[in-house]
Image (tube, rainbow, N blue to C red; front, side, top):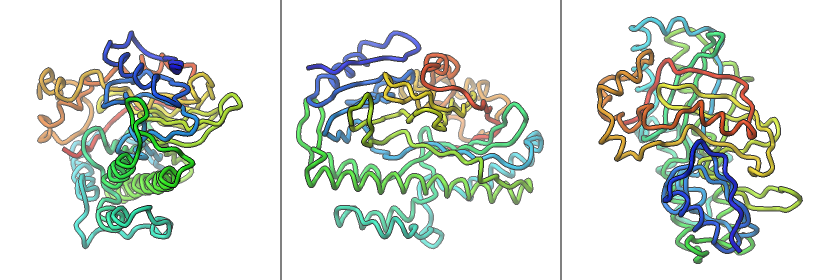
Length: 374
């Protein structure tokens, strides 16, 4: 039987997206699919898909950047100092020194937290990668849509938001287990009760913990830059962090499913969440409404309107400059940011309207300074 597909979208979906969703719905053991308003093509499983199975784990329905997500914290001062071009430039340069895009130099790399070292991964190759590359990449950003952003709310309070995940180790975990998976329709899957399935569950948990530590390291590094440059300190009680590429066992309508979220966040009743827009548009702090038909989920962001290739063809460097008026960024990187321009993404306001059943808005923040790895 083909699984039911329910949609919360801003506009009719393209034939390509519909076809991709139908292929997944026809896979054995897929029971339910919820489509978020930021849905777009990305391999065999669309970003913005929430897929429930009974006992099959689908690595492709999580993606390679396991645990990718967003974290935020508020500071004890306002953001008026960001009006000064020289102070903003000083902060932007400081973030660039404190937050590598790819990896730390070996002498600067932090040690893995004890709870990650004490919970070994399932295969010697993965364990070696964790203590090698994993250590070098802890507290690093990555490229693409990952970012560090200073934001202000309606009361001119200063917020920091970061977007990153498990970096290379998440990709390695996905590839390792997908190679051991069996065909499940057009996808590859693992029976959660099998030794391989149990190993994947354990490695998923490790990658989620690593991704969370990575974001917390980014928050700490940027907080140190802001303390030196502006004399502001973070309020730890305001911290929110959430994953948007993961799977876990959940009960919905009395049935236990393995719920896979690829580019979607959990939005259980009153659960805090974060939904970023784009470099030049608002982001939202939300609380989940626990909407059962959507598998208690919501979008993870605005969602791409154009693929990266199409954005580079259609959006000029000059257009990026115009779209980012009022936002401090490194203008030397403008050509490399064309595929991350606000015009490459959907209207975040329409996305939030499309999922008003799924989340309620707690706070709206707007970008003032953006750092990205290019």
